[in-house]
Image (tube, rainbow over all chains, first blue to last red; front, side, top):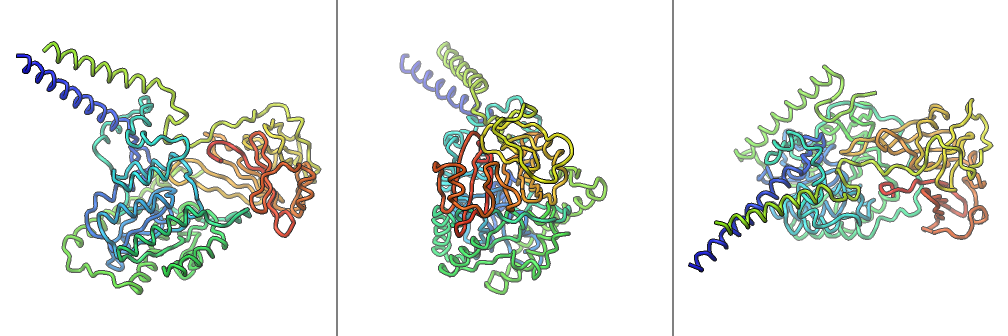
Length: 362
Length: 207
């Protein structure tokens, strides 16, 4: 009789613990920010990758200068190259490294493209951007490394493991979208590309202010070395680029360091700021925010040029006989062009991209 | 059955306590990941002018009295008779200074808010968004037509700088920095001459 009572108590206790864990999990999912609904699509980018199980010839890693400036759909339509952008806002170099490390657990692309702007940041910068980069990443040793490398002094590792500890105070902000978004994520990217079709011409860009020290931090070089080694081990061609964004300012001293590094390591380095005319970019038409990021027309021009460069330099696979890949990219193309049409319609009707996070022009 | 009820009651009580404790706990200023605005500046706008802020001798001062802005640092540039303290609300100062020769704005990736750069004759002023207010994040002297209240400008020597501000500076390469209150004053030299003189606001987000 006593044994039976013991068993009953044990079962009851186990069930209660499971219920408690379940409740805490539900509360955590409820409180977690739903970036898509918060008009912060950048917060959804990292998780989008897990929805696409196919092989990619090219993987991009880096900050907004990749996810706003290159269009994988254009790369597919123009050159038959499959690609995905693992980009996110102010992605720091150690985040790029760990995202690449994680990506290579899923697949081995032929080419990895890394935008070098983040070499300017030698230390963790901002918790808010860390969250955009890390919250969407699946748990793995790579995420563990990324969190540890990214945390500012004020941050707490446990709050990444249990986001409820970080977001518990969102009670007062909860809305219907928080409930509907608990187990459903709205993807807005096109293989990691964020589309903006509006135009805001670039004006006079401020000159870079003189710096006391132009030398990139050793921490950045260490992670760049790790990226080079990772690609070498896997037989992947790494391509370093500086996207043609006019601001933040890219110093000649920084450019020389990247040229020297690329030469030493035997990897290509393309500074698109020097190729603006060759690519055909017109910063009165091809940017949506005065030269910081390219808009749809600018991204398509840049991608066409880069696609040709990739085709000329590397023997990338021919996917014409692969029905699964053809079907996926055909579907992706349709969605891409439908969004482009919708943005054109919205610009025509109300003058700015209200539904896509743009602010009404003053 | 009684045992089961007791355990369940205890667990749900714990759950409620956890939730309430979480809601009531201090959030260390991290209530929302969207909360990108730096903490409010220490400067109190519309307060009497700091006695530490001498007026400049700049020519072509705009008409009317300059806005009076209290500084929380002894390092403040005065331009066209108008003090430009770090972290100050720039709106009344902009109204006084008028349209800049060049204006540039940069939207932050993902989050709302614009960093704005106003370039006047000899001075560049950059602001950061703090809610609906644009506050001064940096003021940089561009030419020797403008100098600090202590007489330092482009072309000053390290000896000039230490004579004006003292020997207690931090050196980063060829740059001397002086910190006081919510402002960092930096003078960068090249070939023994200052090529940049800049006041930078100090706060949690701007570093």
